[in-house]
Image (tube, rainbow, N blue to C red; front, side, top):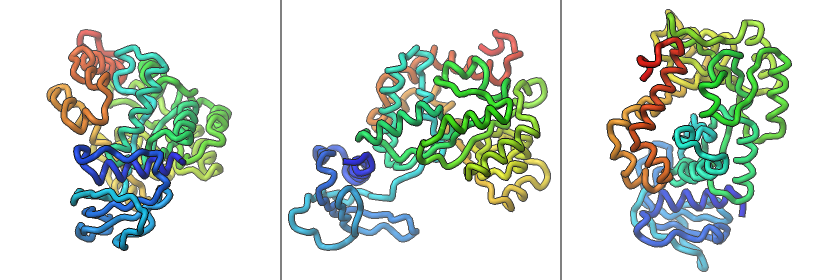
Length: 350
């Protein structure tokens, strides 16, 4: 049984059938013919939901609405909604929530990472884009899925390029973002990073960090020189990978436009310069808003979120426990301030 078949089987179950109606099918049966009947199907075309049956063979959907063949397992959706798999276009699997605060071991981080893969699938997310991940972790994830582990299809950006002294460099992020990858100070560093990702499937682009800081005295980060940006752009074209750029203000957008970037990996926080939005639109540049990050900031003040049924179903208890801990939030907030404003006094950061 391939990881794809197991994933398709699990997703159809999680979307079609309320958990209380019956025990889920055995994933070992994923290759047997299956008919999901009485499903309210939203097909993604804009058409209204319609009641139909869905026929699956060898883990793949083969038809809709046909009579159920004999010797086919039947799963009654009882009118529950079925829809195409969702896409999460910005995840970071190796950054396990709360791992630094809890001082998780490497094995615990790995176990929780696999739980996150399953959690995405249980919420109907069948494809993800990991927007910055070490080559060793990405190989590990692909090996886990290929061996039958449950999870979505994992696409990724790789390599990720950051300048020495820039965003994603230095000790502030190292503990959170373990393992690390080298900074790119020279074209030779760029080539070495490409070699690290040789042979990995589903690499759809590269990522460039173009962040100076947060303005004025908070501009404490170094970006690549124009010469290095030119080298990164040429190498990306040579490898036929699109460029995604991490930005937080209009200066990063200018770098992205100069690189001919496919997408910005975050919403721009300040006002764009005159004509900048028009230029982005004309260039066909996409923006991943990542507004869920901002929404997550409020979770400190609504601890009941950690105990809602869907969160309890898909988020490991150890992470929900951390999310209820005021000390964990204090540590996270202080660390965040130290990253973006290292010159501020400690008492202000706290």
